[in-house]
Image (tube, rainbow, N blue to C red):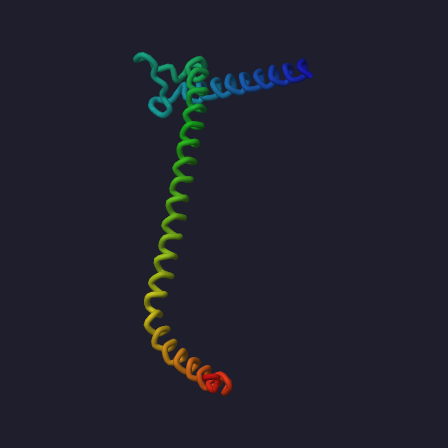
Length: 133
């Protein structure tokens, strides 16, 4: 099992290395005749027309892209969390405001209803309880 895993890692490494070399050669031939776009400068030397310069730059660009993607994903998670918190807080505030708005109406309706219920209960008491004294 160890030899298979090692050979797979070796093959993957060779494929990645070949991909970087092919990309470096392609970028160096594409930018060889260009004046300004995509220049790669190292110690005041323009190495954008050399495959070695792009072989150095490609892994740096890949790592930078990965770092930027991770930072943007973290920022997106934080923004989503803040928006969710704000949405929940606003919903709770709206429900509390609605409760405060309808509370006087509920009291206005509940007091007469409770008075009628109390009067009905008072009138429906059995007569023997009143004659117990």
